[in-house]
Length: 283
Image (cartoon, one colour):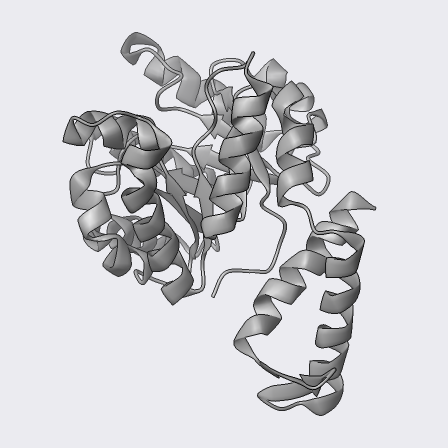
């Protein structure tokens, strides 16, 4: 089961421009993802990889921000080169990897096996963005203890199946990702809203995403993050309820407790712990 931590938002920065790291961290996003995939032209892959691992070797201060490295698909040659660089970097490598275009659990297992052999505790995030990946989402979500979350990539997915990238057209896929993540105890995180000038549209989609079970959403620009955090952050009432439930389980040391006449079972505890982590991040 994934660690109960705040993953309300994420933002990408290109691996070719390591100087952007402090600005990305200061954006307030819960996850900063250094990108070696879509943000990098094929001719610049080697340079981006070298600059990224120079940045990581310098141990840049990220504070409470979760840092991930999006490598190229583990089924591609560039992805294998990225993975080799992760292994070579050892403890100076990224704390977490984001795996794009994952089609089956074997691709996740391959990465995990390399990390196991190297003795690294690197965690994993997976992007579901193809018809095959969605079909295998349940198996992918149960592919090992390193896995923390499932991201939904609506742009690539809609292109793969020849559909519109609209809420109604993508609702089935989003729901499947949430279901797979929930069954495996993972976080489900939604695709960024791509129209920077349509804040109302982004808010509406973020609210709809939260309503069906996503815990966070991507941003393409720091100015989107406050709205995303507002939508995915707990209210004061939510925080107080979570505190009471966590304290009740700590005192009871059983699989269920009764609060205000309501029976609450232990699976609820993880969601309550995430709320308290979000509260800590909010100060």
